[in-house]
Length: 231
Length: 268
Image (tube, rainbow over all chains, first blue to last red; front, side):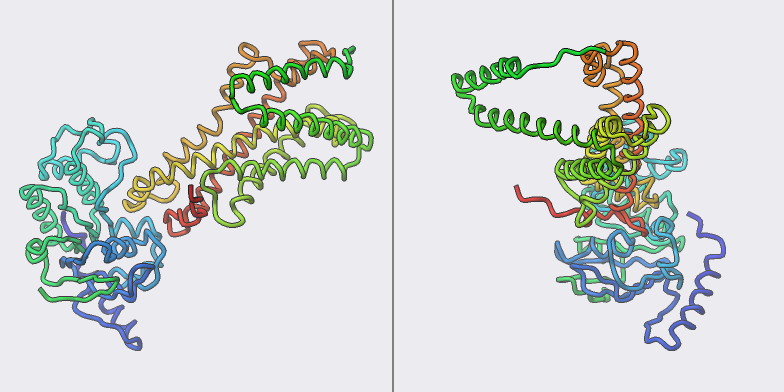
């Protein structure tokens, strides 16, 4: 993906805007944060605050039921939640929800399918083709029924579907959980390319070695509590 | 027009048929006899009562009493819509949404027929208003309950698919489109089937009634066609309004799926 033109400009503008905003308020402002989350909460999740820089990947870890999925869904505004979330200093509440979700896109651990065939889930199959091949999926799977695909194939197709949106922030819920090491490495490489292009990601994983490989900062969720840990 | 009045003895003889059913149930240990007895008694008492009520209303020809009777019919039909839902909306909406849509659709269609096609004198004459409303109401009620039921069960079943579409940036109408479409198809199916099969498979009750009462068959058929149009209109309007309102109630302005606005599942 080519970074959106004027990307740096946008970040710099937003930094100035945020600096102006936080002049009176007590707000952590670091670097050129792209996504900023402050006191985000919902039932089952204690207030979370963190910032995500452009091109950064932040790993979200924690035991099952700690609220990792709840956190990602809250950021995508898929459930009722309180708190402030902003992208490039622009408040989420000021952006229509569908547009917000195309900018900050959530990939569920078990994504859904609403039509019979693979191709019906892609507005533009030609654009999807290179990604489909990069993830070792059969290039001619356009006409296959969804039910014929394996869990791992469906998981990778769902990732392709998300990547086609060219979102600014990816909220990835265990995107490699059902994949063999080879396929997982390809997914990691694909995301790394996006990060290099200025996109950023929150990545939920149980795998310690993968976490160490992906990110310099981890978000530890435990019993709804959030701690930021430097790897 | 001539019709053959029934005397009480002939009714009593016909009741023997139900008695035979009861005897069969006892003999074969079907354990239906109690239910059969209660249902038969209810049928007789309810029909006799409504006969008396209608006789009084027809004699009065009062807009007030006719309106009141229509309202009672509507409220009962609303309760029936609610009772047929497996998972209801929480709070006021469980009754209000279906009943409101049915009230608007059924009244519009009935008043349209009374003022434009049938035009009795006066237009609210209960002899025409109440049977027409009853027929429209019964079918609109079925359409709305089927539509809402299918919408809610569809959303519960396809929650993951709907939320995936929302997560990919679809608005609530796009994300719910598949479920909405199948809910409205389910709601419209009975009236479409019944229009397609009527006259071949079954002779509709109203038309048969008019023929038994001595009406010319072609005139009775014309009435039946009118009633079919009214029913199709009422069902389509009512079910569309109810399903759309349901779609909006089960999502919110931030385009989230709000299944928390359903009442908790009854423990079974």
